[in-house]
Amino acid sequence: MANLDNAKHAYLIMAHTDFEVLDKLLLCLDDKRNDIYIHFDQKVAQLPELATHHAGLYILHTRVDVHWGDVSVVAAEYHLFEAAAAQQQYAYYHLLSGVDLPLKSQDEIHAFFAVHQGQEFIGFQNGDCRKEIDRKVRRVHLYPTRFRAVKGISGYYYRAVRALSLRLQELFGLYRNQDEVFKKGAQWVSLTDAFVRYVLSQKSAVLKKYQYTFCSDEIFIQTLCWNSVFRLRIYRKTSESKGSQRMIGWHKGQLIEWTSADFDRLMASDLLFARKFSSKHIDLVDRVVDQVCDKQVSNSISI
Image (tube, one colour):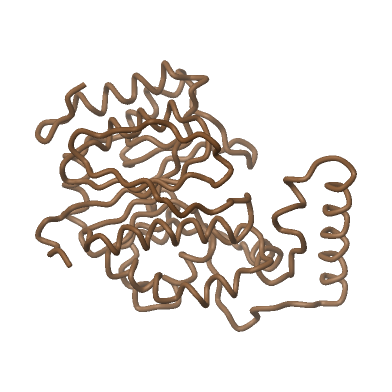
């Protein structure tokens, strides 16, 4: 196993669409201090042609059929963590989506994590979210891979049965996982090697516990950290965005795509990463990428 003196970082990317943005993301991460791991949803029939000049690039051969809200999202994350941890010991493992971009250069990102080495960058939702947690992981969610994906009469059936089941559980006060203290927050995190290996040691229990739950990808890492010694290493408990170092746009509870009007706001942020971007606004993507790459001082990318 490699020594941490190398201070290499692993970027773990979950991708399923909009590969034009993914290609731009790789430009920003293409640095000799990085290795990049990509998991493509099993439903992607034709994988894009991708390449790097400086960073190691690993495309996972084992692919999960990912369904939004289902534990399959967690399973895909585990594939990424396992692939990277088997390769070597990294200073940090950054979980990103394929439509994320860094807001800082690799020099700035590596310098930031060198200063804060040993801390876990995990976003925790503030306020009282007990009702949301009860609904998502203390109830049994039937047809987790079908209620949203299936259209027509069959989809209506799955959604109706799921909704009825949840209502009956609520009426009769039925709960599971009652002894667990759950926490939730953003799925996207930057973790130390020590914590990643702890997460991997809990894989079997995690995948069993979160079967037939909803959006467990926003809960399992926060919960593992909070209920372990790694809780003492959390970078920032009181701010979900600063805690994860992710700038995520929300409007009335909906995830929004950044547009050209957001460029100055994005560049003025002190956070390291942002989501989500879209090829529909490729002019913004290009401006962000140019800004980030232009700030590179050493180990720069040849564009």
